[in-house]
Amino acid sequence: MDKWECPCGYIYDPIEGDIENNIQSETPFEPLPDDWVCPLCGAEKEYFEKLD
Image 1 (cartoon, rainbow, N blue to C red):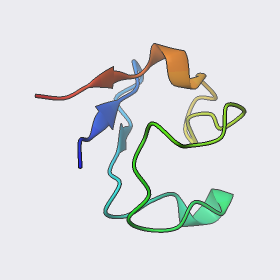
Image 2: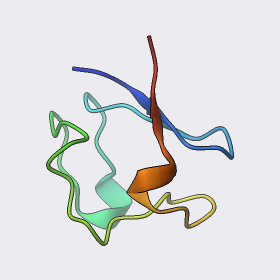
Image 3: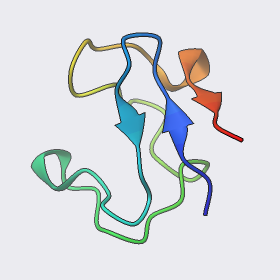
Image 4: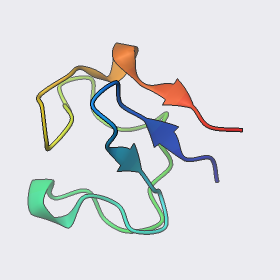
């Protein structure tokens, strides 16, 4: 599964998920809810870029 980076530097790692925001581990980035935002800066999903 791909990791995605926010402009603030936060990296969403699907292996870890985002437990603080009820996103379970092993959750890919693409099916995250549309209202999910970066837990550090609040940026919306559209601003994240897939890491190579």
